[in-house]
Image (cartoon, rainbow, N blue to C red; front, side):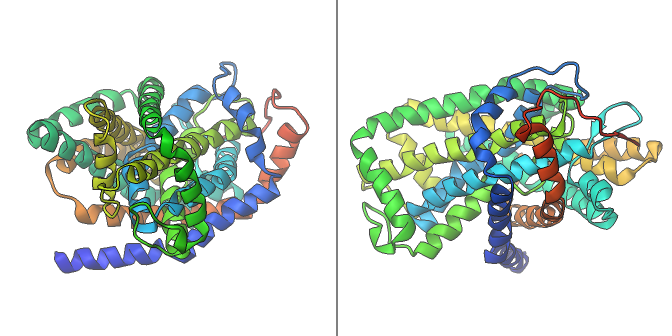
Amino acid sequence: MSSFSDIVAQISSAIWGWPMIILLLGTHIFMTIRLKFPQRNIFKAIKLSFAKDKDATGDVSQFGALATALAATIGTGNIVGVATAVALGGPGAVLWCWITGLFGIATKYSEGLLAVKYRARTPKGNMIGGPMFALRKGLNAKLLAVLFCIFTALAAFGIGNTVQSNSISLLLNETYGISKIWIGIILAVLVLLVTVFGVKGIASVCSALVPFMALFYVLGCLVILGLNWAYLGDTISLIFKSAFSARAAGGGFIGTSVMMAARFGIARGLFSNESGLGSAPIVAAAAQTRNPVRQALVSSTGTFWDTVVVCAITGLVLVSSIIAHPDIDSTQGAALTKAAFDKLPIIGPLILNVGIITFAFSTILGWSYYGDKAVEYLCGSHRRIRKVALVTYRVLWIVAVYIGAVMSLSVVWNLADIMNALMAVPNLISVLLLSGVIVAETRKYLWNDKLDEYSDDDVLQL
């Protein structure tokens, strides 16, 4: 088993090496330039995300779709993942993570646009879409569509399920001594109660949970930054200098190369915001929206909130805490996060604990929908097979929540990383090869100031 774990770790490291990073970041930069820097529309997009479009076609509101996507995206990676980047790449990794999120807005916009443009309607009247339909309808690449769904359905059990329930279980068991068995049972029941209502139930819970958890965590981080105010200038200076100069590392940090800072900052940023992964477009396709560009703008705010805001604030908290408290060990990711928040007595650990629990639970909900839609696509028009497959998948999902809570899952993280990378490849192919369609739609609705117009695209009836 140890040998298998080592092999999986090596494969994961190879897949998420420079070729994958270059492909993802290259797509971000290419789409940013081709779409004339869509990041400049971020405030318009934020305003649009709160607008209701009840007369438009779709299953959930634009905000509901965004909240569900954010629920799956904002997870333990925003807390522990950033700490790992700082531990391995030094303070400069925070800047590279932020830059990745800034450029990733363009790719998330592109994914959301394609999801709505090529979405379809199920026999029950529900919307279904995502990279598999962009590949199928836009490029006639049916094999890539099938592969994307297979990788999505498998990856969901890893990063979207077991590792999240395991994070909650470890935290509650080590902090409060609660039995892992009871934690697993309670988590499984809670997930069952939410997911039984489908996308509307998931969107409703996420719409309430995501704003609360994000606001609670960000406010807590701002309090810590307030306590570290005297070191904030040095923190920002160190982050910028060490992103481009290995000699700039200091204040309790071990020396790291610029290459290490860039690699881990970019990798963690990409992993955190999921821009290019192809997951968020699956729920974007269910949004009530007049045209593809409106939802594309709303979807792009997901990367903004996840990385440009939450990851950046986390990075500032971690780096400023190390400078303010040189006794903090900056070489261990999880321990670094805990040590930084422990410096704020009582409230700090509470913020961290609530953040990890709510972030992880919401991720389980969001990814359950992604897995469902991937299975539904794989079953095609066979209604009976689809019904049996979906019920089976949902039962396995609930069981996996329990298993994740009671077992040690070190190898699962690396397996999930591999599946996520394999998901990203066909999705990025669709974004790059359909970039002309993305530009044409953007010109039609956004650049010509016609965001309020309704799309006349035909919706495929399955």
